[in-house]
Image (cartoon, rainbow, N blue to C red):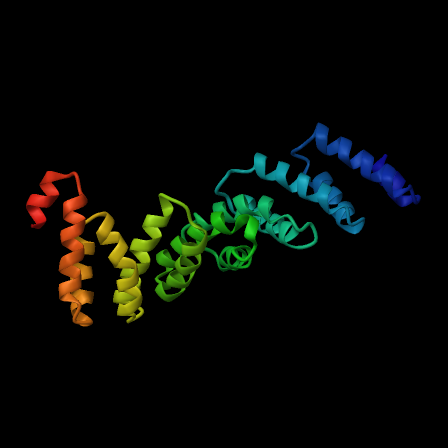
Length: 231
């Protein structure tokens, strides 16, 4: 019936309706689904196309190449004409969890992180992706963005990781000190951060100031073992 309608010039809405019925009754009918996708795209019914692709993902194996291809198409739709970055975010999250990380997934995350409604969700995933890829300067740049938008407990992790990158990778001891000082003040028992703080403080001949800060921090801590170990 559908082929006859198409052959003899049936109206678009009738053809779309029939294909929708076929896909609903036979969701595994790949030909009917492909034709419905084509018709939605041709008619610029992009919201309906996105809903169709979402249902296709739900049927596919979660980590399959088919699912990832569908996710990339959806990200393109949501980022583009549908202007719905919130719906794109979970698909980007799934794509960034793959090993290896695909270039298209990374590009999608880089584009989405500039959208305020999803920045707080995308930025940690993008930071971790850069870390896994060994792109530490890019990781530091994304962590710097997170400093403005992250909330506890993520914010403490951002401070810690960025301080280490500024000291070890970016050759920015001043920037590292700016982050290490409040971290050590809150937790003087963190041996690694305390050692880094003392090392960076010595770079700027601030040993006296560092000793005073540690004394105050140890006096404020309720952990007697920390006071005994560090004093």
